[in-house]
Length: 470
Image (cartoon, rainbow, N blue to C red):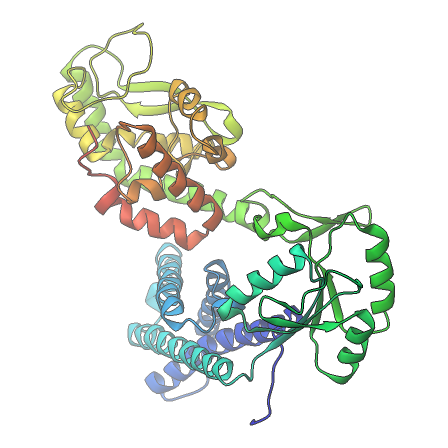
């Protein structure tokens, strides 16, 4: 072990992540079987227990994946892993309990076994993650985990790449040198790293020393120079990558693709595609239906109370912008005095005379938002997402706030990341709306099922009742 050195290349990272995913599934399954043996004194596990254990193991693998617990760069940060792992395993337990209840099979299982399995699996997963985090951190400090990089290009572009790599202290990357094939204007050092010579010197160095990756940091406009350089590096068995222009430092890492065999750098992509989109749709439909069933007596009571309080419809309908900036009709319980034909859209303010006594209670507790569950069932909204604003407000703020309309890259939500962070109700200034937009965009970039469940769990405590809800 003393001379062990591991590369952090993407291929080896995938191997480590694959082994970790296999270990997680195995540990969950083994703790289920061992818990049964401790409880019943036999390893002959009935079929229904094996099915439950298999479902739990698969759920764990998927929920941990959704929670980004298989991100190699984060494996050494145990504190961050601990909180997310706790939430993920809690989601597994909740899913199993709901499946047992609605499937009417919960009586077939020993409660002692279930509790011992849930607790022991959680402890084992935490210990395993803690051990891996300690091992990786220890190896990193001792220099056993290292990814060696040679940079080609000592010009401004190469200098910027070296400076960027120098700042990534947790990445485990070590620059072994900078190389440049120019005859003049070549500095002795770049970012504190020596310029070791020309491309021929790089070829000789790479054959005598370990170099995991050669990063070419030259302007793409120098096409002939690049083609000559790549032809000379083809003789090496090393990975060679081309840094995609100066804009690469200011753009998010979206990966690469190809169109008709031509490699393309992805600059933007939809935030919800594939299984993420399917997961979000299932979450919205299932939870909104359950919430409608749960709140139907309360909604009926509110509807009757509004009718008895005075003239006007029970529901207030308002045009707002939804996904991809398309107009939708948002439903709310009417909380203001009925005034058909009133022009314009004015946000409610504190002590607004238009708000009825009942409406004030509904708005303060956000119960006026409950009819939007029908919007969710119709596929126009989500349970969690950026709050939809009135059409007039959208036009107003889109003109003064950068990326305001980027909120519409996903469906609007009944509650959102901005709301549980206290940003709801009246926006008295563009700065307040800018803060709300920043939270909305952060939510879109970070979306996961667990993130949604976290926001839903926080909403009754900090999202519904708020001093700005009037």
